[in-house]
Length: 189
Image 1 (cartoon, rainbow, N blue to C red):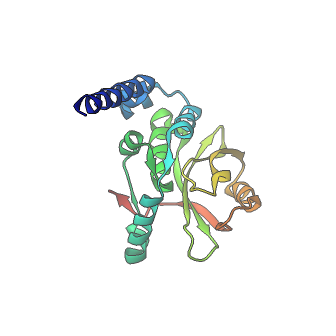
Image 2 (image 1 turned 90 degrees about the vertical axis):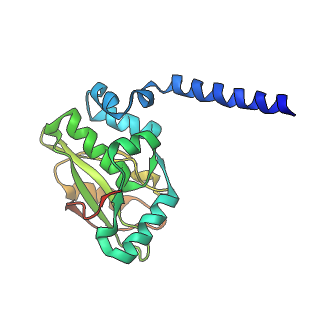
């Protein structure tokens, strides 16, 4: 009995160490990883490969918003989301916003608020930025069933072009009401 517990413990430790070896960016930390990223494509590639949507986190924040209004929105710091690799749309958008600004301040990353027209369903937050005068949108925080939103979208001449893209998506629980550049009404937790 004791031998099998020891064997299991050694196997878990070996798998954990092997996992660290496979993900050197995670071991280096957020600042070191971002220092290596050269363009918005690197930010998107990390989010696409690593970020996982957390239904529980979204539910907690939605309960907070129901009590406090928009100021009840909460997001993790970019480095916390990088370390945990989980969150909901606001966490993903915050990491994108921060990383894009560090990689190239000329991207001028900003929050975009997407109002969902479906009653009692969540609204959505993403990050917009510019490249060569065109608008791009980075979204890797769409929940389950909204996967068609995930990705880097653009180039667009205006947010209306992105709105047309969203309006064409057929996803349960989502119908575009409106979208706009916005300030984040919530705060870091």
